[in-house]
Length: 114
Length: 114
Image 1: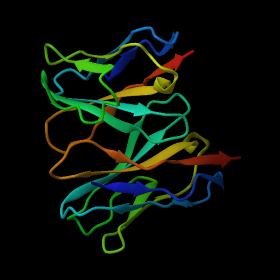
Image 2 (image 1 turned 120 degrees about the vertical axis):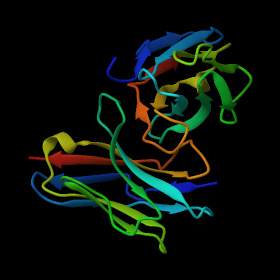
Image 3 (image 1 turned 90 degrees about the vertical axis):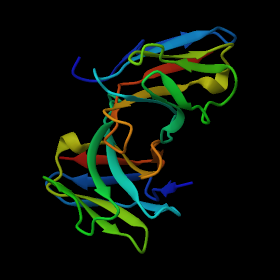
């Protein structure tokens, strides 16, 4: 089984600043996938970024990038140039290559202030 | 439609009533998932369909929970004799294939059991 831990229940950042959300996971699988999902107050869960564990290179999507440390089982999300629309719950999730269901952390509530 | 839709968006039930929650996945998506999200928590896996076949129902909390996808498209999650602990947001997600592609989530149904 895979477990995902997000140790920061709430975070705040000023507009245009950079913020990093932490995530650690535990797995016995060799191949797996990691995800960051964003859930705005409207509750539609949206994929922010995904990382395939066998890839060394950290994934990047515009202002969003990850720091994937496989040995440490760490998968943090960096948001650059934060915008008010980034205010949301952020969930880290994993799934083994042999599986299908997502295992979610408890989430980090991010507030971007003007 | 363009995305996953769910209905109703909000449901209030008296304890002991039966409820049915509907999910319309993205057209052509093979895989369909149901998750339960309690207040302040990350989503937790309930059940998984590949086409019309229910391949995994290990996350269903009790035999009061039943899900079906008879024609491999629309899915219904039914909860019989609802209890207060069933109060949660029920999220549906679909995925194009049976592999590890991205899961796309619907807006959820918020169930409140009084």
